[in-house]
Length: 147
Image (cartoon, rainbow, N blue to C red; front, side, top):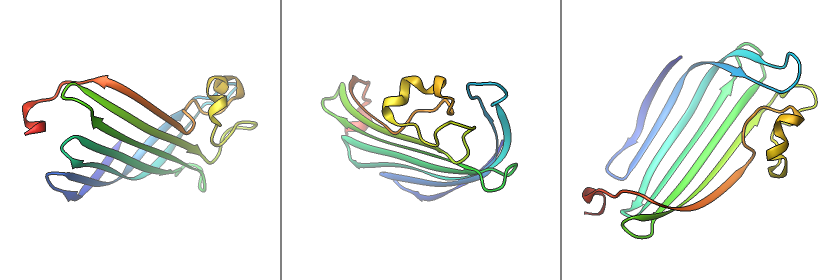
């Protein structure tokens, strides 16, 4: 909906943004009448950092206090590291976590990794559990990235 932000740090290697705003959240759960809509505040930060020309780190953390149901909240966290192995191949590692303070009855606040594929049958919010992934992928590198 409405967002405003501030560049706390912005230079050639690092960008840190602090963000605040309002959101409307629409959550979908398995089961009868478990879907819900609520107004939320959004407080968060995003970080993009390049410690070396061949290594980059991204991270974001957002806290969503529920304004429709006081005391309820969500937290989203994501982090990633990309290392250029060659000019055309990079190795990427990502970490994601989602937390929900008020899942519907019988659901989990943070599903465990082994529940990932059973999530909809168990009834919790359709999000990923704490998840770490790693992959090597080709990418296009412009001349300025390695100058």
